[in-house]
Image (cartoon, rainbow, N blue to C red; front, side):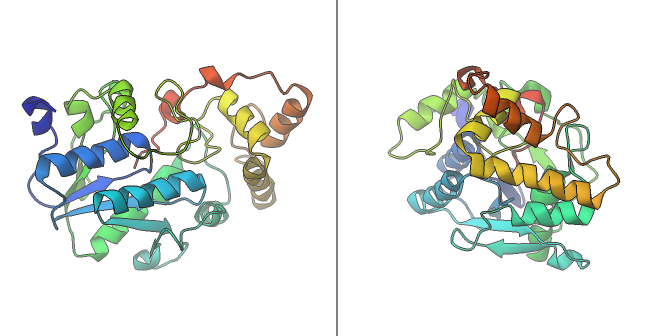
Length: 286
């Protein structure tokens, strides 16, 4: 790593949160920050927010990064509670939810589904539990390292926030692209055991995220019907909780309609050209 790139990973002053989404890009960011700073000091906390809809391979990858690199990673999950101090729970690789329990609890609280226009799931399931965990440790302000690359310029937001944290984009500052990340993982003794298609992991983040392309959602329906079923079940739940609006993940089709279509035309989508979760501007990296 060049000295210029190395400088991009030098920790800013004060408390620092490293947001680990569980994907290759944020893991690369974590590795480079540790490398540039001679490890992860006590004033830095690495936080992984689990929604319960991550693939099992993602959870295993987070744990393996922690063990192999000797880096402590705190796992947090959303909890439905009136007391802000109890709206998160610290879990572990063994106790983490694996059937969408935090996500379902949020849907029951909101009584409707998030969608491309109302993307409250990231804020409620990832950003807020991490924030409330850090506040519970005594932090009152910090800088959050966010794993957005240089080839995602529209997602870099450098304006000052009226929050207790400010954003830091070391990967964007270092000029890192998805090809940089892919090359790094080809040289490592372990990797996220999910497909890497042209630098994109179509099964990353929430498995059936509504921000993913139709091709990727169709592939999930075809290849992982038991996982796709949860997203269909949540549409049924939302229908029972709402008067009608907000009962589907998409305004264009329901997941049941997608499943029916796939049962009749299983070769309609080619996932080799599928798009990454954030292709439509999704913010799934917190």
